[in-house]
Image 1 (cartoon, helix red, strand yellow):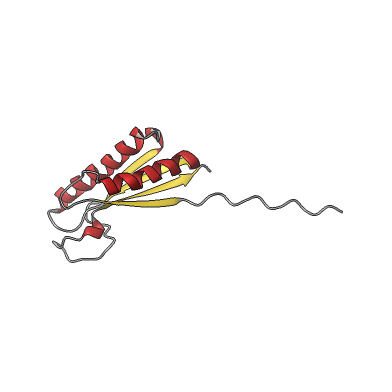
Image 2: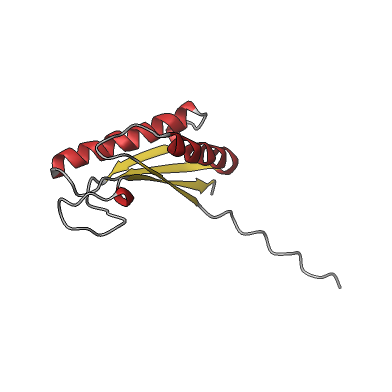
Length: 124
């Protein structure tokens, strides 16, 4: 009697990346670009979707922070697309100051909250 065939390998897990921004900026820093190159390579390997979520800290007005988080998400999406990730698989969202990684009081700036989170999903 033959042994049963091995179980199929589990699908690759999603990969997460975070890039940080300077205060009141949406410009990509050299360290952010290095992280994004890793994310581009992963997207090319996994071939699935890419989620890009922009965030700000709690310094400044809510409407301003919402717009800034959108600028940050768009800067990351543009960089990813310029590096070969199909724009059709990149989905952006922006949360302004409403999704802090580091809880702070309103009006308090914090580097850890000025970020874009990137999740690369494998093909399903």
